[in-house]
Image (cartoon, rainbow, N blue to C red; front, side):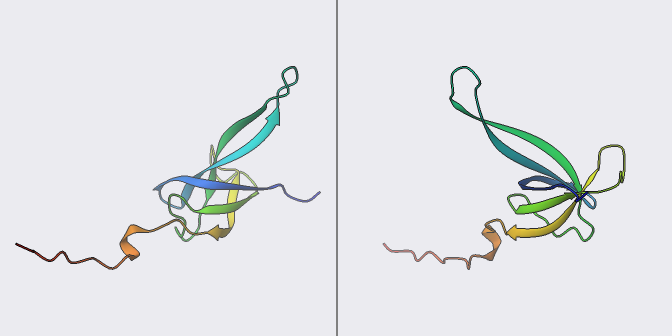
Length: 95
């Protein structure tokens, strides 16, 4: 049986070799038929600490790595916008 794969957004990278990934899914309310957004957070193993907050990643199910980690980061689909990559703009004083 193939391992499950999910796509989500990194919401925390404060732990060593671990990231928290929020996976969002859409479902339809059984009575009112309105589409509802539901999300769940997964702890995933990030071996090289490459992921940053805001990155869109693919995680894959794996053996238990700790009490809460059962997923690992397979690939980073999209990097988050980094403010430090922008060149500084110098302001000129005009009197």
